[in-house]
Length: 169
Picture: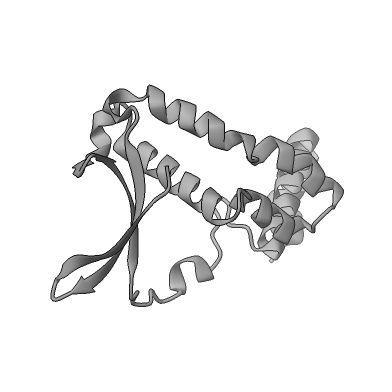
């Protein structure tokens, strides 16, 4: 193998700026790989190789109008997006109004590091967002002044059976 004919050597000789960009990209990708961060188009092996374990219980976030469960698609926005927002809100409440993204940043870059202190205000939410979420939820479609419940289910004889239901909003 002739090292003089490799891509990086040829790139360095012909386009030094592009070589610098590619080199910086490779270095950042190596850093993220060492930190265990999955970034497109590179994924860690464990991301798809871990076996899925059987759960005893399953959780769902549902909206009710009285005793009637309301479908997510009545919001005027994507049902997937709406469901994601409800699950994010639920997780936020379960963690005493601490954003799980903040915990992820702190675990990857160290609690109190300069990078953590810079990223957290840009990428995370605090307790004031609970009010913002409530205001946003009340403006959406048919879901005005409805109740949100965290429901726990068990898989029994090929069907889901509700175990308990707790109001979260």
